[in-house]
Image 1 (tube, helix red, strand yellow):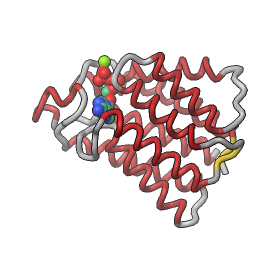
Image 2: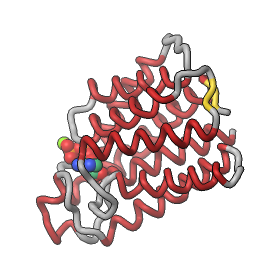
Image 3: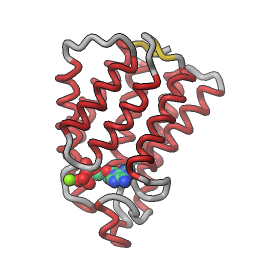
Length: 208
Ligand code: ADP
Ligand code: MG
Ligand code: MG
């Protein structure tokens, strides 16, 4: 199971990853968007770190709901509300002091459903969903297969990274990049790339 402490470590690892990858994410967004994705994610997760500092959650889900609420209120771009919705929807499912692997897998699916309800993107639209959907499929399959959460998270991260890579060949059908039409082809989606960082951070948190 995953406890509150590990959940905090996950979120802290995301903050570190967004700090480290800020320029890369912004560069990706400069090719097919408005060059602010790295700035948005870094600002958001810096605010999350501050909000969690001194916060005393009763359950695993509280950490994630707080994370999501903070992202929604601190990030202006599309990604803020989308990631915010993801973390809030995941957190709302996890009311206990620990989350069992199968609960976590189900909560992640609720997070994806929230993102898709808000943004209406499906796999293949060249968005964060192209990393999120395969990551969660890999996570769920590993858990069903009896693997521990660390192994499941490693597989999720690898699947998210592959999904992000595969967005290079896609034409964007959602978000700012869709305004470019076929000219969006040949560039990796920034949001799918940050989603891969989110799952790599989870793998680090659960295997350290
Ligand atoms: P903005 O486009 O408002 O500047 P960001 O640059 O922070 O916001 O985030 C852009 C990313 O958001 C895209 O790379 C894409 O992955 C994601 N995105 C945009 N629109 C959607 C959507 N409708 N559904 C899912 N993800 C989306
Ligand atoms: Mg942008
Ligand atoms: Mg913007």
